[in-house]
Length: 389
Image (tube, rainbow, N blue to C red; front, side, top):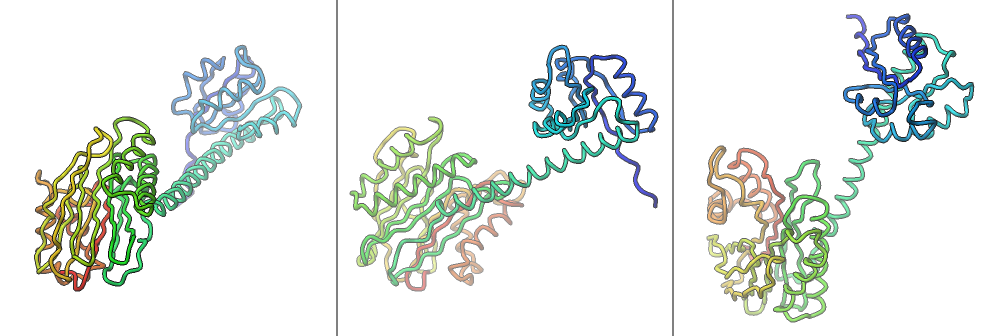
């Protein structure tokens, strides 16, 4: 099999001199180059004819733009098209300066033949593509680095030293390219027998929401460590949300739990968030906690519910709603929701899954029912005492 035929390129010549335009056309014809050549006689006309163009051959002396001013204006709208500068001056420094401004190459009128012209245009297109690929790769690297920084803020190491309980954490992004959303969690111990937990979700799917999630988590941790009265913590977090969000439509759902390890009791607050699930005595059931409204809509105290954890053998599962928003079966309209989650936890197979692996198993089963990956981010905390079930 012989070499593939060269790609046919579309070239736009921006030249107001009919003689020079005729010469360029003849040079390309002489080289039998696979180019489709169009001519614009002004920068204004060139802007209107850029669609689908692979390369622009630009004269620096135009009726509506002179020198580098025209080059800069064209580069601003050229998009993926390569730009070669065409000048009648025998001035190599001018061409070098044009390349420094962003052109892919420069050619001097009267100093090129058809073969050199066609080769220069094709090389310019390939250089532009290489530059674009390098730029896209750099953007991906920057996004990944940004994601890693945000992940450290959204998903911290639990701040605890007790051996009475264990914490297992989980996070999986539901977004393309692996970027984080606004889901966050944290665990803080303020006394030998007292733990504070939070799971939250800032609405939206962008770096802005992820950054806001970091701010809310850090604010919550600072308030808890500062021994601010519990009933004042969420109102203060809501103030941070309302002052830092990019628009009034941004809100957050939050679930907080304060556990007293001596009495085996917990205080639960739900601000528009699904309830934790308690695993005890071989059963799984949602905590019967009163719900409040989401943070950031209408500042209102979040009700508190006291929950009896029972024995020294239990687990408390906290999660964001990405886990329960998938379908119960491919093509079904019904969502998994909290009852479906408890149903998964009631399956005999779930009891054979080690607790550290339980969040990953739940996501796998939710995706199986959904018929594919879950659309939203999923964050989970599992707080375990004793055997955990």
